[in-house]
Length: 80
Figure 1: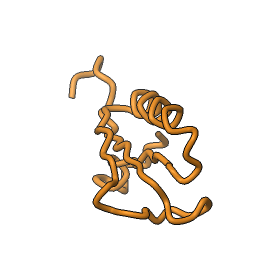
Figure 2 (figure 1 turned 135 degrees about the vertical axis):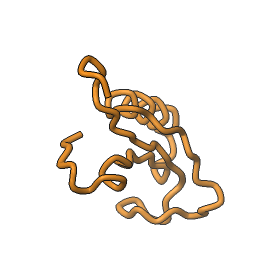
Figure 3 (figure 1 turned 90 degrees about the vertical axis):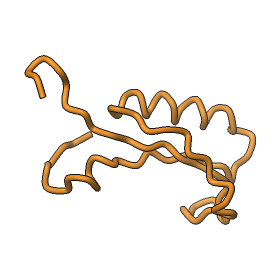
């Protein structure tokens, strides 16, 4: 990777309706929406925020940011 290019830190944004308000279990896994994979936290956060605001009227609907780079390289120590 060149010196002027920022390190790629992949993030996945996904969401769906949960079985309970304070949980993380989806009501129907077949309906989980994969919003996208993003090269950094900032762009993932922007996508997450847009989806979360779009579904604000449904209290059981939640979107999450998954730090894929931590799963792909758990020893990297990246903070984002």
